[in-house]
Image (cartoon, rainbow, N blue to C red; front, side):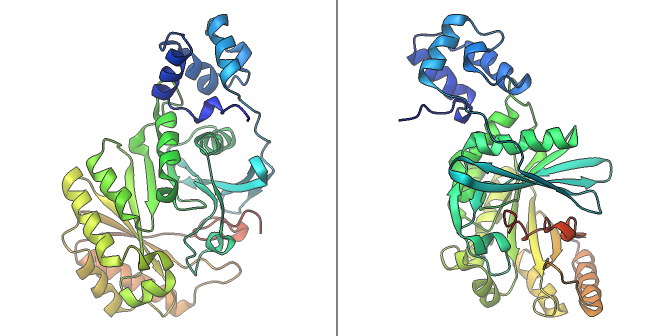
Amino acid sequence: MPKPDIRDLTRPELEAALAALGEKPSHAAAVFGAVYRRGQASLGALEGVPPRTRAALAGAFSMPAFSPVEKTVSSRDGTKKLLLRFAGGAPAECVVLPGKGRLSACLSSQSGCACGCSFCATGRLGLLRSLRPSEITAQFAACLREAGALSSVVFMGMGEPFLNWENVKKAISILSDDRGYHFSQGKMTVSTVGIIPVIKELAAGELKVKLAVSLVASDEALRARLVPMDAKYPLREVVRAVRDYCRARQAQVFFEYILFDGRNDSAADAAKLLELIKGISCRVNLIPQNTAGAAASQAGAARAKDFQKRLIAAGVRTYLRLEKGGDISAACGQLAAGN
């Protein structure tokens, strides 16, 4: 049986592992510094770690080299999409997104996705497998190398983060560890289609990441057709869990609403959305449907602006997201591992 990858351990887990090996748990800080701060890739030669401890770790753990980025594609707007391939050939794409004086990394939590949303290219792949913490943090490292510096991280790439929550949670811990990448949890956003048990866990927990919830549509029948997961976690129950989350955490939530040209972008749809989220501290991101090779109609663009104005007039902070990376299939819902 292969040895476990040491990069799948959080620092508390590594401390426990060192104690079990008869070594000082405090050496975990030096291991993290060598691996994540200095990028050292050999357990037998970790700088600042005593030789005996290095030998003990090398006997119990591995640190296999990841394959280099297989493909990098650049968009006209500065977006860059990176294709990585992990153990067993599992592909995952991550994206560096430019903004005003800032760069964000969009990370994948799974290779493929089991949710099967009808409008999403990743969903059409099906789930190949969930990614390990080391494979998620490897995407961060690849984006960091590409960007030079990152302002924020969003878990909005391939997969449903809350269906791989234990591994995503560990990756968040490693990324934010002050001996690891020391990237603030407050600059991380995790997006979900509405996995209620994890929303409840976040409400009761201590993680400081931001929550984004993909409502997709405000009409329950339409959402049920578009989002198969709605059968298990219905829209109104998801919104109820979010309401409880905001109340418990005294936090704001991001709602993501996808505008399907002529299907859910009318004045009546805007009114229905306002009624659904009434009283919730939130920001709404309106996302015009991204379809490779197709542009929204002029009428659709006008309806999108009107939809935004109606929400703003009702006092809801609302942003109409500009498509980024559409020409390289890197926009929302387009990641398909190079397919």
